[in-house]
Image (tube, rainbow, N blue to C red; front, side, top):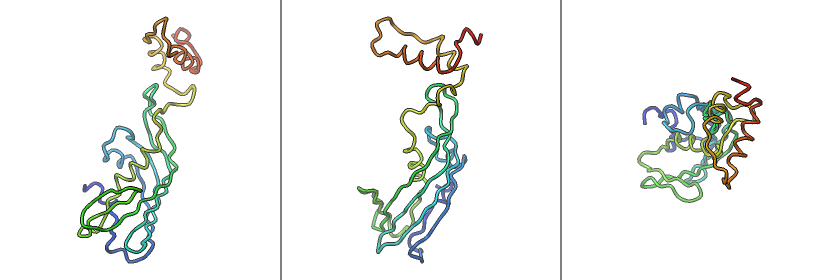
Length: 178
């Protein structure tokens, strides 16, 4: 995990009881993490590590924007990220993830790489359905969808009504644009 070496937190050599670390999750971070959900973004991370006996409490604050694809038109859209998270890290004999966000890392290694945790904190902020606000979807894609939507007369789930509402929000019909 060489491309994420900046996200290693050395626990064994932590000399102070409280340590503050700042990170910037930029486009390269999201490319390196190789996930389909978030491809770009700029998220500032403030991490406070507090040593409490034999445990380390990690308090995260994340603020910024992630760039994700709109489910409706597939165009990129900014999604605000503003969240906090907490992890408790303990040293032990082998790596383990327990309940209540408790992570055990091998004492012989003495560090934890938090890159994947940071990505998960961002990804968990994104709702299952993410669409542009009304009227901001790609007009070209919405016109294409309007032309090719197939609905039946006895469709009980009201997809046609929902789709017409989406198209109406775009401001003009496909005929007006053509």
